[in-house]
Image (cartoon, rainbow, N blue to C red):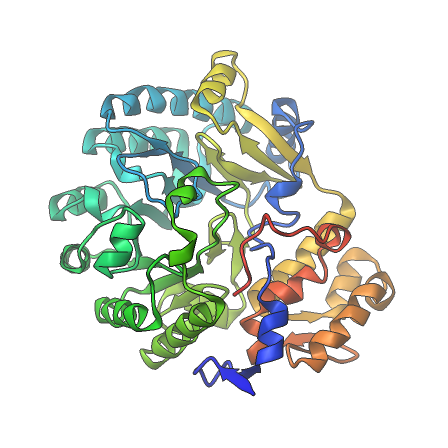
Length: 469
């Protein structure tokens, strides 16, 4: 017996294969993953990495990517696992911007004025919690201290409940050219169950307004596996999303981890769809998006063929960072704000997760980093392998051997032996030159990448990760 994902590119996946790979695993927005960061890595380590970049270290010639975390939300979404502060007190935003300015000053002092930036992403929380003047202040601050390149990607996450056509026009005027709408599901009962009510008509009007304002790309976030969702109700949401025709769609499986994320304790576990229903929803989404002309970019992401993400996939330029798939080169990422995760050279950093600690460190004149990781040579090698699999779905042995001065089959003998089982399941094809993820395997690419994850292989406790399917 097989369960078809109803997508010709995915083919039919045997039930036993689905059962074996419907398990927790990293999303690989980085390798090593953030759960491996250590508190021994602090502000001084980041300062050293910044100075190395300034003086010709790894990545010095590449433009920067900026991420700004705005943690505030007016109301709590029960499914949310993000770092956020629930408040209706909008006066909290102005002092936060003051601290962001201090953090930016510390980065500029280390790197120098006018560093080129080709990618900017405002995430949250809800960035649109900030009013128009506050967003203008933030963008002015960034433009004065960095050089935002013409033609760059400048994106902001939108809570549809906090914007109207007028606000979208002002966002366009500030230079944003990409919008990401948090939708999750359009079914009223599901929206009520997760405490995020936003009618389809409201989002439809915003999408129509954004089109008229000339935004280059619109993204819609969806989640399957939410309480009260059924394959039939989710199929209706899929139809509505396809009607909106956003350039990009991000489809995530809900990870119910109430022991880690307190808001999820308000979700009644008995209302969650079972495994068979989740797979049915995933299969329906794959089929519907393909029928509507979307390209499966990889792991959760779909794009219309003319969108920059789909073009990057075709041209082999796809990359992956802490925001997911990206068209930008593998550049350094400065993450500003509470809990922001960044990458400088061969190191990862994470800011303080609480507002109090974040502000305290900046009051002391220190970068607000509380943990991170300096990557070893083995980490960097495995990162290159895992990112090739996640972005290109293929790996040639010889280029890796030349770049890292290794014998691939000898260095990864245990991993290649483990991949034989995945080859038997039809997920990969291995020959003397390299390995290729199959059309079926592309939908389970996290499982393929996990084979090369030294930390996961050593620690089989993966409950902290979301499920692969």
